Every structure is written in structure tokens, then in C-alpha cells.
Length: 463
Image (cartoon, rainbow, N blue to C red; front, top):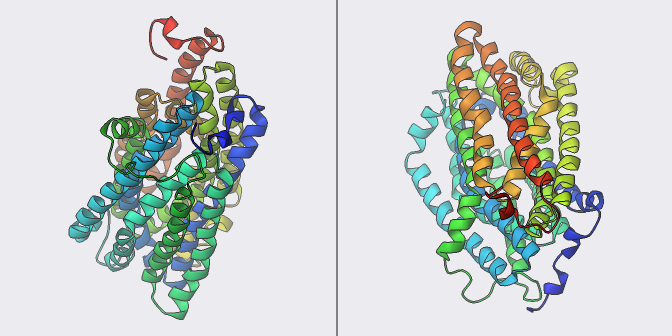
């Protein structure tokens, strides 16, 4: 056995689920909350220090940033799932190959994405909803973010690998560091150096660069179960194929988010103008904070569910899902309370412009009207991915955004204008949750037919 394998977290298969969730999910929640604050900090300083049109310009970049995130999760999410399952199977040599492929694939994809996006940056931003007023802000911000695209991909991919290999607290600490460092740099670059929206972008890239260096040093330590060694950076097509296939669910979800955000921007520009896009940007940033908490829960659930599924401990797989789903619904219910009863206070941290504040508060109230159930849908979608069930994960990932949300975004504004855009969100959430309940029910009926240790093939088909 390689040095350090005795530190592999085998307690994933024996420790109480509640305690494991606390151990793995709490650091991930803190990290994801910090990550959402990362985005909020940029938006707050840009809104307060540059102006309402800068907020709209920032919102125009969301589709491109979603697309970049999609390519990052294509590698990172798949690799994290593979690492957890391989730990359950005690296949440490294969896990080390996955680590090397995280670096190689993220570097290749990050460079290609950066080059293509920079070449066509103006037409891309116009297509994503920019106007003559907002293009300068959007272009200044996203150009710098794209320059650091490879760094972003590497950092988030390796951070996910760090978390899945038994170091959730260190992964959390690094994310918190990037937020704090970015928060320190933002006002210096925006106000002291008078760099405007460019200052916020440079603060983001610099903070992520420092964090990436720390992650690289972590995996360069040969005393760890997973570490860089000669030969592992060579692209292994089999590992790459498996990793990319598992990551296809979150990739398609983020790609769909790019398409949906593009269409939202275009509809809002048509029915509400540049400030309507800014209102969406503000609501998106506020809601994103609660969504990222749910993602933190997902990240805590993922290694526990993946390990126990690999170890054929189905009762533990079911238990971790239900505990995580309940917590997810609590988080989205808190967001619902803010949206329903304190919307102006929520959006007021981003802007003091009265017109933009009024548009944003109304948008937040409508979009969060059935938000308590959204946490369940998010957890269930990620649950399928955690078990490596790619097809089911993809179906659930796309149902809300492509099957339901896009048609509603086109149809409802025809009669209700901008309110129709906002109403599309809760309606699609409700429909997607119905589909999720149906698919999850089928999976759990199969789980109930198996005893711990049973080979799932005895059912005659794959789960």
C-alpha cells in the first residue's frame, strides 16, 4: 500500500451519517457561502462604487461566466465523484490517475475557452444582452476574468479533489481565504487606484491565483494519499472519458444556465431595458448565496453517498440523502422569507438607485415565491450525480431550465411583460420538482429491494 493510504477516510462507511454530514458538509457550506460572498462582494462594490449601469454590465457577463463554469465542472465534478467511489472501492492507484487528469484536462479546456472567447468578445457580449451603454463595463470586466480562466479552472478542480480526498476543512479554508483577500483588494483597486470595474476583476484573478498555488503545494506533498508524481499528468483517455461522462450532468446544467441567462437578458432588455438586466443581476447574486449553501450540502453529501454506494451500503446512501434534503429545504425556506417579507432590504445592499431597487425588490418577491421546495430539487439532482448515474442526473439537470423555464420565458412575457419573466422561475421550479419526485421514487423503490452488500445487478438492470 502506498504511503499515506492509511489516512484515507474509511469512516465514510462506518461513522454515523449525521456526524459525517457535519464533518464534510459544514466546511463545504462555509466554503460555498464564502464563494457566494465572493460574487456578492464584487457586485456590491461595483454597484456602490461604479453605478447601476455597471451592475447591468456585470449581469451581461453572467452567461459567459456560466459557460466557463460549465467547462470547469465538466472536469471537477466528475473527478470528485470518481474519487469518492474509488475510495469506497479502495482503488487508490486509479484515484491518483484521476488527480493528474484534473490538471491536464482543466488546463487544455481553460486555454481553449479563453482564446475563443477573447477573439469574439464583442459579438458574444452583444448576443448576451449588452447595449452601447453596458458593453464597456461588461467588456472591461470579462476580459480580465478570461485571462485568468485557466487559473480558475485549475483552482476549483483541484479544490474539489482536495475535499473528496479527505481534506474538507483545508478546501474550506482556501475558499474563505480567496473571499477575504478579494474583499480586501476590491476597494483598493476600485476606489484607491480608481480602476473601476476592472479593479474588481483583477482582485478576483489575483485572489484565485494565490489560492491555486497553495492547492498545488498541497498535492505536491508525497506523504499524502494523492499527490503529483511522474507520469500522472499524461492524459489517460479512459479516465478522462469516465470523468467527463460523470461530469456531463453538471456541465449540461451550467450550459443550460448560460442559455437561459442569455434569453433572460434578451427578454428583460426588451421588456424592461438595461436596468431590468441589472435587477436580474442583483436578484441572482442574492439568491445565489442560498443556492451555494445547498451546493455546499451537496458537496458534503457527495463523498458519503459515493463511498457507501461503491461499498454497497444502500441503507446509508438513503439516510444521507434524506438528511441532506431536509437541510437543503431549510436553507431555501430562509431565502423565501427574505424574498417575501424583506425584499428591499435584501437588494438595498447592492444599490441605492431607487428605480433599480424597486425593480429588483419586485423581481425577488416573485422569483422566490415557492423557493422552499427548490432545496429538495437541488439535492436530489446532485444525489444522482454522486452515485455516478449520469443519465438521470442529466435529465433532472436540464428539466427545469430547458424543458420548463425556456418556453415559459418566451410565452409569459407576451401577456405579462417583465413580470412574466420573473414568474417563469417559480413555475418551472414547481414542475421540475414534480419530475424529481417521480424519478427519485423509482430509484428508492429499487434500493428498498436490495440488502446491504447485494450486487445491484441482481435486479436485472442498472439502478
